[in-house]
Image (tube, rainbow, N blue to C red; front, side, top):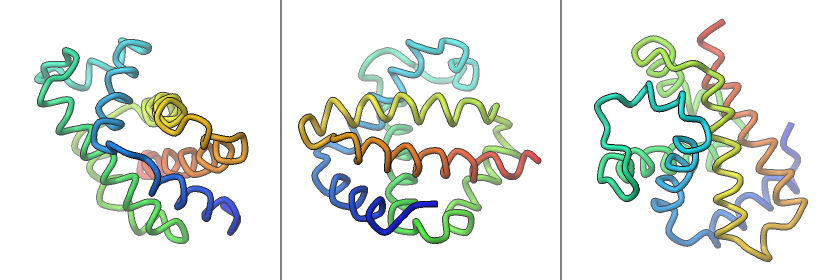
Length: 140
């Protein structure tokens, strides 16, 4: 699915991304604002802008994405534990993975600026779609 060029573009742009932890929190905040129904999975969180809970969860999101980027050739194995957690324990609607991916794309565009070229966008779209599919595979 991801070509060698896609993988190279993702790795290069990921290295350029400054404030990765902030990017994760920004993506979550954007998701909560744009898709308020996603807040139902975080009833115990203070979801106000800049909250420590959102920042901590944003770091987890970015860490998982970093792990996916390091293991693009075997996403299922790399994200198996996370897939199990979301399917069996948290029971998150898998649609939310796609919604968060869309929000993360916006954050990437803001942070990367001119470096977020159409081919970088397309490569991340493939990666984030694959990550969302892997996270949802335990639901089937």
